[in-house]
Each structure stands twice: as structure tokens, then as C-alpha cells.
Length: 329
Ligand code: DGY
Image 1 (tube, rainbow, N blue to C red):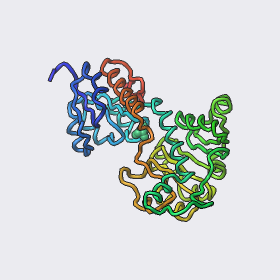
Image 2 (image 1 turned 90 degrees about the horizontal axis):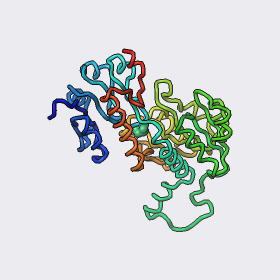
Image 3 (image 1 turned 90 degrees about the vertical axis):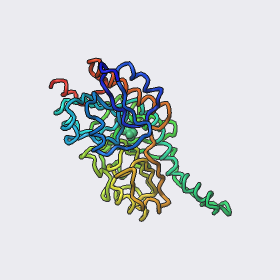
Image 4 (image 1 turned 60 degrees about the horizontal axis):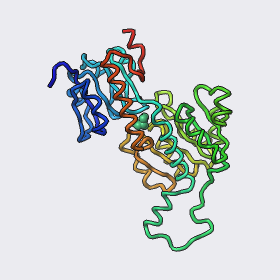
């Protein structure tokens, strides 16, 4: 190993050609077999490292950081960083970065894919066909809900929420949203044709409700039994944000009792495990956290994480630094 270069752990398998850019700056420790490290193994592998490129599977907390005095940067390829304790990072003088923006459009596409599949019962119908159950066509055969001309609700109007809203114009949808802060009047009317409403109105009035807010202790179980009870019985709920924003047990009950018509879920509490009762329900479309998974976008996410660690090793401020207060330490 060249002792003049700092070492970097790339904690998950990533496109090998994309990683080549790192060789000018770092000795690399790779994990191309893509094992998920236990907290102990992660601590061991990070000993003496300058930094790490990781995904949401790496939990970065006080315990871990206290054992890693040489660590300077943790760089996730994800936009979501609920796996990072930012306060602890700052306290241990570790820069934390994420990969915003590059996945907005791809994730918005997927929110639409899930919404359409859920409303029009695409996976349920496909299972029916694959199971050899198709005997005849019928007038009420797999009838679902329209997307065009309906009302789209968006909870969380950040960059991904806005990208979801922009797509609604082509379908003649009425868009309402709720967010911690309201968009400017120009963004609302010119760019997104979206109307700000309080959360209760959003729940009551949406035909299709898409969740696009970040996970935090404040957003934990933002959609639970009380919220589901306010939704229309004909409504669909789509979660492309994070597990934990929805109370999955409450959602299963609401789907089972037809309190809402259906759900499209890309994220789950405790994923990659998920509540097994989802599998018994026909009115739910289930995907394994793939909303940002187009090859172009996943490469862009990896590249963004690489740019952040390279900036750090060059003594520059990483463009996506999350804990700016670390610079004052
Ligand atoms: C993100 O970028 O946060 C996606 O959910 C992938 O983890």
C-alpha cells in the first residue's frame, strides 16, 4: 500500500468503473461481494480510515464514532440520511454528506409507476393471470380508480415532491400538498399548479396520496390509524419516502378493512424485513426500495458521493456537506 494516500472504505458493492476516479486520491478497501457489515465489523473496517462511502444500511452513531478518531468523512450515496446521527458526527469532527438532486426525477417516475399500478391494480391482475385464473372478461373485471382528472395529494413538497407534482399536469390532475414550509406563490402556480392545504384537508381530499417527506423522529408514523381513518375509502396511499413514516400495522388493518382502496409501497418499517401480513393482501403493490434504481441515476448517486470524499481529501468543503457546523470545530 502507498502510505502517502489515505484509505477509504467503500462499504457496499458499487459500479467498479465509477470507483476508478478514487484511485488518484485513496487506497481503497472494497466490499464488492456486498456483505452487510455488522456494527462490530464496520467499526473494525473503519479503523484508521480517512472516510467511507456507504448507503443507508450503515448506521453511524455516537458508539461507532467514539471508536474512530481518524475518520474525517462519511458519504452516503442516498439522499436520505436518517442513518446518520449528525450531532454525533459534528461532535467527533466527522463530515457527513449525502447525494441530493440527482435522483429526483427517477424517484418521481417511480412514485407515478407505483401510483398507477396501485390505482389500476396492475400487479393484482398480473398475479391473477399468472395463476391461471383468467376464464372470462367482465364489465367490472379489475375495475380500479382513474389517475387522470383525479386529485393528487403530496405530503412532503421538497425536490422529489415537486418533481412528482410537475408530472400531474399531463394527466389533468388537481394537485394539493402539505409541507413544513409553503412553496412560494410562483412555485405553486407557475411550476407545479399545486395548492397548499393543511394536513387534515390533504388526508380527506386526496384521491391518491404520495408520501415524499424525509424520515425523522418528527415524521415517525405521520400516517397511522387516525390519519388513515380520515382518508377516502376510494383513496390510494403511495410511500416512496422511508419506512417508519407509515405505521405498517395500522396500514395493514386499513387495507384489510378497505378503509382505503390500496397502497403502493417501496419502503417498509425494519426493511429489508417487512410485516408478513402485507403478503396476504391483494390491494397492495410491493417493491423492494427501488425508487431511485435506474442505472443512470444510481451511477449519478455514486458519483456524487465520490465527489464529496474527493473534495474532503483535497481540503475543500464537500458540496453536499450536511453538518456545516463541523467546519467551525
Ligand atoms: C435515498 O436516496 O434515500 C434512497 O431511498 C436510496 O436509499
